[in-house]
Amino acid sequence: MHIRIFGLTEDSIVDGPGLRLAIFTQGCTRACKGCHNPDSSAPDGGTVMDTDQILAMLRANPLQAGITLSGGEPLLQAEACRVLAEGAHALGKGVWLYTGYTWEELLEARDPAHLALLEACDVLVDGPFLLQQRTLELPFRGSPNQRLIDVQASLSSGSIALFELPSWS
Image (cartoon, rainbow, N blue to C red):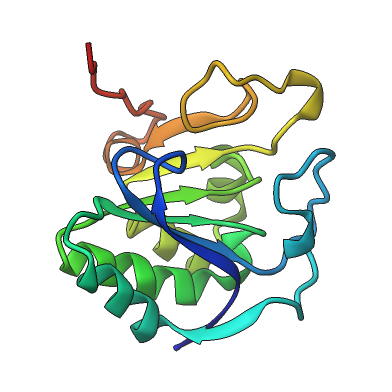
């Protein structure tokens, strides 16, 4: 399956725990002020890749803990992102998803492709980046409105379960 990407980082340590393959999708309509990837907004920009090619990169590096789907807005290419997420899980790797949408918006919209992608993820970092609340103090997110949500626990319980980062001290 094809996916349009803005870029890849094969050794990210800022897009989730451990060494990660960060996949920055192309296309976003949110236009958050202070976006860290403003060139990823145009839906026809970036590069087209095959999901099998990206999964081969993940397979080739046993040190990677998983993938992170970021953007742009990954939900604009939900089906291709779901394929990547399921492929990562088949390799025993974790999956983090960053989106400008909130958990509540995603569930309320009931978009089957979005819900299928959520079901294939471990952690959701939800909500838009808010420049006026920008902080470097929070791990794996840029503003305090963004939450680290344990997707599987939240889907099972029917209410938001926040992801707890391990204590490294």
